[in-house]
Length: 265
Image (cartoon, rainbow, N blue to C red; front, side, top):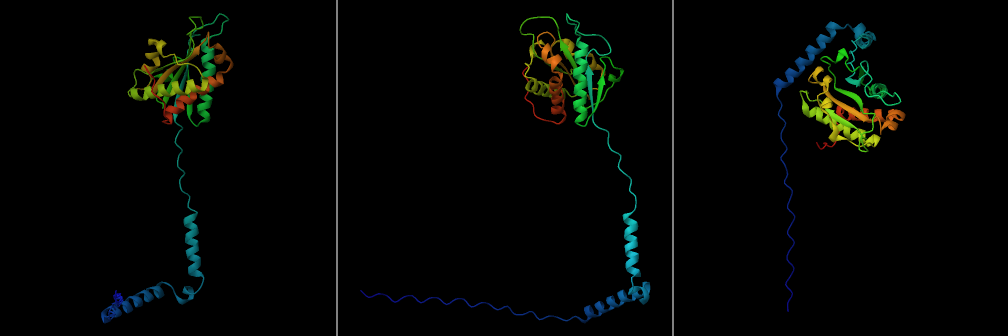
């Protein structure tokens, strides 16, 4: 069998040569360039004589102008005031609140916790007002948030009378914000203190707390009862710093727009 001859290899295509474009000389463009250069040189020699054009005078004048500009005093911006938060120490300045058999008073417990919350929020960079129960400043009070701190009964009810409660302001112009503040307080307080949320025992006195009707409607507010003075007395009186940390963390959760799970009604 005869083997067919190999097919010839096709020749590589020859590169196409581009025709060089002939540069076109325009006499009018040349004359215009020369004329412009002449005007520029005449202007320079009009403003600066040879004595200073080629000396340090021009350089020194430029440096002097730069220094004068850099040394100009500009007004300092006025710093904005720190965002405001209100903390009500329940019963402070009005009455004792619940009183235990050994004369431990709710108002004193509330005041200690509220003062610690104030300090923690101040350390976080906020302007914090510590308010009495019926403080005159509550009328039209405007702030990022207001939280009133109370505690529950100092008498034995039953073994379930332990834990904390939170109620959102009923008169808020933005109820969804008040609910979010409530959610933040419940989540952070329970996490930090380990205490149980006692949702089913929130009273009308909490839901329709008097301060909710007094403050500005755009101030987000809530009330928290941080525990029962009978069964929760130990943590409330011996570790108020932990209690205050839970309250402060809940407020910061709201202000900083942190996430918090919604609470079941």
